[in-house]
Image 1 (cartoon, rainbow, N blue to C red):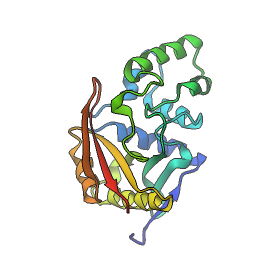
Image 2 (image 1 turned 90 degrees about the vertical axis):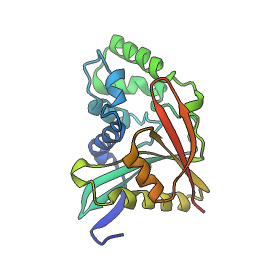
Image 3 (image 1 turned 30 degrees about the vertical axis):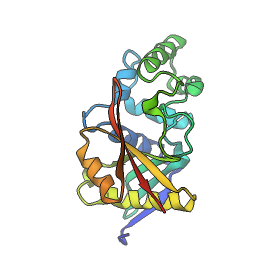
Image 4 (image 1 turned 45 degrees about the horizontal axis):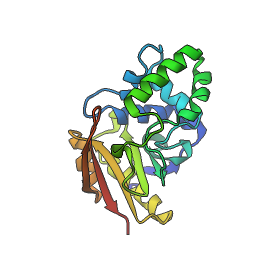
Length: 214
């Protein structure tokens, strides 16, 4: 790892940065965040919602403590989350929706409308096949800030995440991408990920990739 680069675990103080990372990770290849669709009619933006979700500890795709941050000269430039042994791969735990609504000052009607749209998109707390984890340890929300891209920082971050997985005694890890996100796919393959499974869903056309850690 270059001398100017270092990694650390995220803390509560990093939530605004992590919200931006989750937002950036959701954009490719359609340049559109799926949360914007779910949040229609709530008056809440995706960044604001993601931050509230993290503060409520309501994410199935990595709580704050599950994020690793890459810093360049002490400034956060990239991050990714990981979910050991995920039981539910939908992005949000609906059981924590009240906490999110309280954080956002939503009315009961707004929260109910959001829940209805979320279930329409993701099936609530059900586990459709395309959201069933295919590995015991899942890497999620990988993103480098736009102004720091093109310098191989994503590879540095992913290698650090794989080392974290080895330290937790995981035999292999998985990561999902949406078909067409060629930049991410090439980055993942460059650190050892191999295509494991391709599957299709009404909203997302995704690929699942798998690598062995030991």
